[in-house]
Length: 410
Image 1: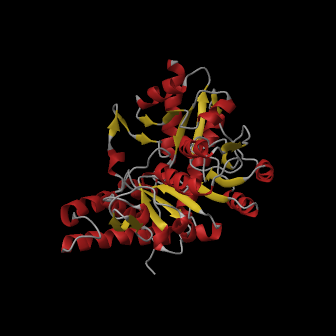
Image 2: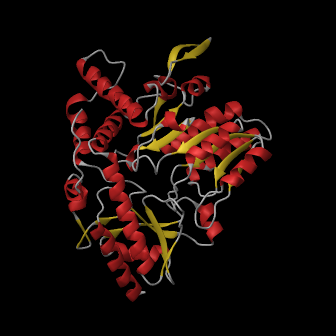
Image 3: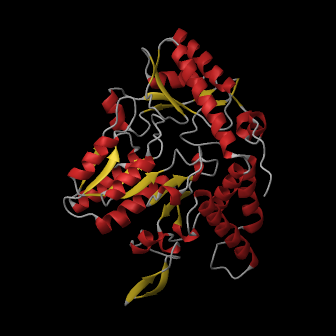
């Protein structure tokens, strides 16, 4: 077994070249990791090496460059399979990101199983990408999308979920592993058990969960799990849909074109086997390889060390927020990960974000593509600071020192 690398936050920060720059004359404090994480040298080098040495299309080439590209491309698929503990590598479908993965399931699985009067359940704190695709397919099928209630603290009500499952013909429960707006860790194992007990399938939006702790799709018994590479140190434009083999085999294709066909004639077309049935056209080869490099980067550490570090940063940030006059924390669920959402009394979130940026502190402001939960809370949005493995306590100190100056200015 390869010896694991000991986690040291200063050494990790040195792997991420973007963190070395200054913004508005101040060292960059990057606290927008829920939107996208930065990329380590190892991922940047993997992209550069592909384009410098191996650039070719995969699967169909009859030459060395294509063979090398195909090997790296499919090796990355196997890395993902191992990373999430899927049974088969052909259960790993490449997409552009979590959004496309959810759309694929909504259109391909939803169109296959939804009938008039059926229900899709999502939580009230979902990202729009896990609401709108279900609304679109439900409208076509005369079905409905209903929210699972969420408390103002950000906890999902399992009792309410069970009631909804009993009262409606539910075909799908689609829920975030972690809320991007509030940082709530949802009890997805309980959700999956409840849904399966009532004959419903489950999709988990893992965009905000995949980089924070290990995921085992077999242990969870989840039907579909979707995530994006760019939130776990990989490039933008590459995502993953995991689906159980029997479900993927039963679903019709999403897009038509090259790679997803077996034979084409004007008498009819037959489709390729998994995973290629869902991967029409030239794939995003370089970024797939980059995702493989990002997994290698994460896997060099003992994951518990990363979890402990991120929990320390999150707890330190919440403690600082409690002691900062005028800061109102939004979302205080019992189980949280990676996000501190807050508002500053008397200030609009956008103004706060702009003034923080002038001091080199990068945060996200707005409704975070989660308008329903913002409407429930009666707020236009929040300031969101989100954390990753390269953040340290000094970043939190810089954030709250900058907030003091924002208060003085406003």
